[in-house]
Image 1 (cartoon, rainbow, N blue to C red):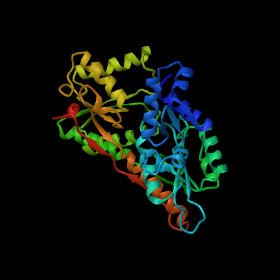
Image 2: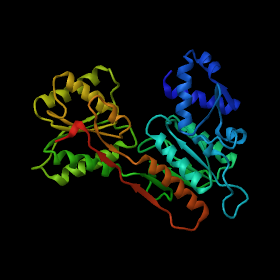
Image 3: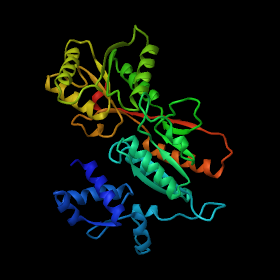
Image 4: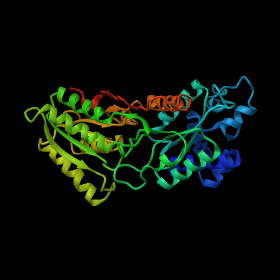
Length: 367
């Protein structure tokens, strides 16, 4: 069982029973107590659980029973002061596809903003399943949330549509855009096209000209990265930049024969001088690619410069990877602020907010 699955199992157990003993749950899963304790620590750092002696419990339950001097981060989920003009605090629901990759900082930012604005935030993780998030959203509405922050799993070309418009409460999309421009849904997210432009311009500035794009095209982020890459290459012009190689890994599974062939083809393109730089999405694909290049006695950044996209683990590579870093924390903060303003000022104009990412230059693309 992967860490993400264990952590989701821990959250389910605590929500069902109200608390959990580390030793009991470790025995159930057939893993070590140390492993479960580390999972609990990760969840507690994100404010999803409160650690107690020998186990964990829901943060709101901890806040009701803990001594006044105890102030862990999870205690921020305790009931907030009543919102202006109402008899209870506003309650917001947040549904994200993962609590392990990309979204932890979004969650953290949302919790901090909720605390600062005097509202309460509840969280659910859909694991990229449309039916699950629909059920979670319906349950939250039934339980009385005033509004929802939602990162829908259904995206361009996928089934699911704009089902969230039928929920009966205000919704702000997080790191997603409405599929139809006519939709009145508000959203806040990263300008990924701008991020791709940043990467291409950086590579051009270091003297690279034959710039490839390697990505998993099935992610909601990928279409915007592709558009930004294409735009930056077109702006640079044929005399300055060359579309050296485009590789969409969506149809390949790691270890498949076809996957090995396309990765070998990329390495050979570098060896032959047809590629001297690449923008790679997401981070782990950039790390795999770098290992293959170095295993083929090709130098990074000497033979080819690499920039990854997401900056979740890019800095941890044995040769730290330059990366485009979305402002995930700011996305969470802004999403809560946008939804709270919608609830407190229902007549104000609707907004769609794009937050610019930054480029963090490291060893893999230095001039």
